[in-house]
Image (cartoon, rainbow, N blue to C red; front, side, top):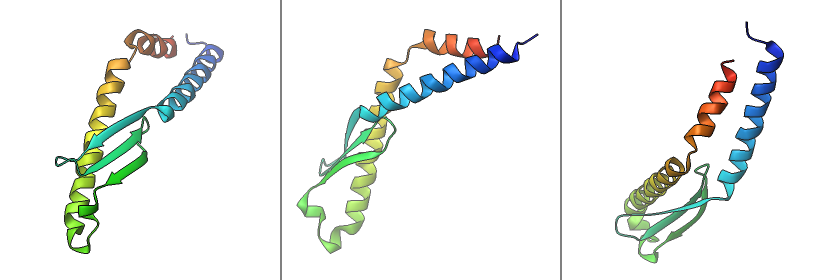
Length: 104
């Protein structure tokens, strides 16, 4: 039979580790560029935009559609780079032990 006190303790530990992980993610930075490299976006590990640079050529009123497309491309590239980095840094043994702790 599962011990409710032990399960609650495991859940609190998991919440603490999730908060710690979020703090670490907020300080990480990932860059993405549009295909023509005229827009660059920097996101953090939570995929929030931290910085953006846009080439002057896209700052004209008649370049609005191109600007939007280049921002989308750069953001998608930054997300892809973040996901690759996160996947390579995952500690699968730690994740398994955390999940195993909840199933006791």
